[in-house]
Image (cartoon, rainbow, N blue to C red; front, side, top):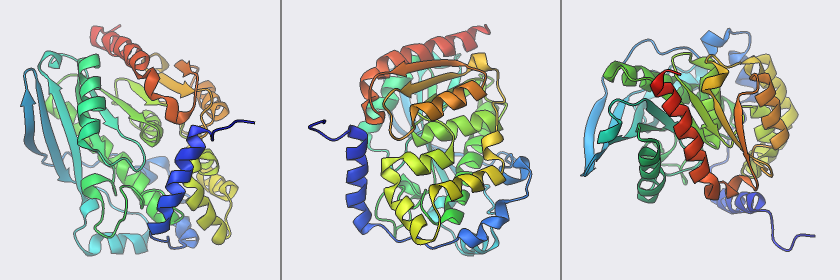
Length: 341
């Protein structure tokens, strides 16, 4: 019997402590019919255009510039009641924010659109370690998208970054998902208009699940690298230790994770397949992951045509020591894209 708790379970325990201050979600299960019976292109539409993007410099170092990007989200909610609430007044989630790191040496290299993880607040520590390290290791321009309800897009009434993003209020969760995917595709269009260099997609944890979804929805991406994630939303709700509160609230509403999984089946989510060649995909996974279970990752890998996948020993929360190797593999993928091979 282990003397210490599994690190993934420990992370879940810490979130359960934080759950004491979170807002209790509304039961919107009976309104989920708004998303059923639609084509995938209606449910997750392509952006109708490219908005004006405000670019403001944050800081400059020799050979490296940090900038903030901001634009109005083109998201239009599908569910009528949520749509009325969304459009009733200007909200923080209406304004898309992103951070761009531009190394001078990467001007003629592919670019990377990156999505961070669940409830990640985008601290200066993250910028000066992860993002700066990725930009230098990969020698690429990196644009990190901030999903709704996180960072500067966090509502004033929200206690924690991202605590309203993925909850048992399933209508809000669906609209959060739809908005993130649309915002990312909108940002992709702007990045392509800004430069003729190819753009890839990557993300970590929940950001990796979103990157996997974008791999299936958006053929304009030149390459894809989801980190320690799969895109099976039903399995994620059932498994992730940090989603204990969501499972508890769903049970209070009369739903089990299997009911949510059945809903994702009805909207066609599990049938999504990559829209870019499998040789331009690099997956990363942990063999003792309790957030994104290895068997579910393997199932996606097989469904995707068995692209490159790197397996590392350890838990979901134990990925950091393997980041250097992952960056080396990703660098090789980007170099291949840059050379056209």
